[in-house]
Each structure stands twice: as structure tokens, then as C-alpha cells.
Image (tube, rainbow, N blue to C red; front, side):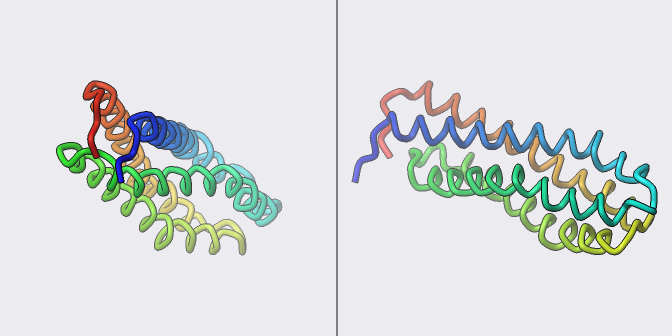
Length: 156
């Protein structure tokens, strides 16, 4: 089945938009939000952490799902000569999702029981992995959009 160029271009743009959104969000979290967590104070920290987890999910969840779904779609839609870009993007998503599931979710869960300086430090330090991966993802997604639009008459 042939997929129209317009559909591929639209999905690539949505994908780049989601990657760009997550790139901006992770940098804000890394540089502003996570460092400020350590200044909340122990008396209100549990409430703060629970609020953080509840409210950030409304931003992170849809962004990650849209980014992931469009990344998977693009693997099968783009021409063979561009698939290497999609696979690099998928590999970076595996890093992001893996670090989120194995490191960040457990650390945030631990922090719901009260401020723990070591857990907070680990959260800040290891978030650089996600920050680097999302930075790479936005570069790859924009590069892919450029290539798709420059090729014009795509044949998937």
C-alpha cells in the first residue's frame, strides 16, 4: 500500500513537534525544576512531590506517547535510505523510556515518602541521560523532516 507524501510529511512534522516539545520540557526540568526540588523544605516536600508527579504526567504522558507512536509509524513509512535515521531515533527513545522506567519512576516514588538528598542528587545527575537523549532525538527528528521534504516525491 502506497502512503501519500502528504501523510508522511504530516507524521514527520507531528513527530518533530512532539520531540521538540519533550526537548524543551526536559531541559526546563533539568535546569530549573529538579534543582529547585531540593529547596522546597522537608515539611511540605511529600505534598510537593505528589503534586509534581500528578501534574507533570499531564505534560509528559501525551508528549511521550505521541513521540513514540509517530516514531514507530515513521520506521515503516519513510524510504529505505532514511530508515537509519528512524532507527537512531528509536534507539534514543529506548534510552529515554528505559531510564524513565528503571531510574526516574523509582526515585520519584521514593521521594513521595519525603525528601532524600541522595535520591534527589541521583535524580538530577541521571536526568542528564534523558536530557542528552532528547536533545539527540530533536536533532534526528528535524534532520528526518529536512530529508523528507527535500526528497519531495517519496516512495515508501
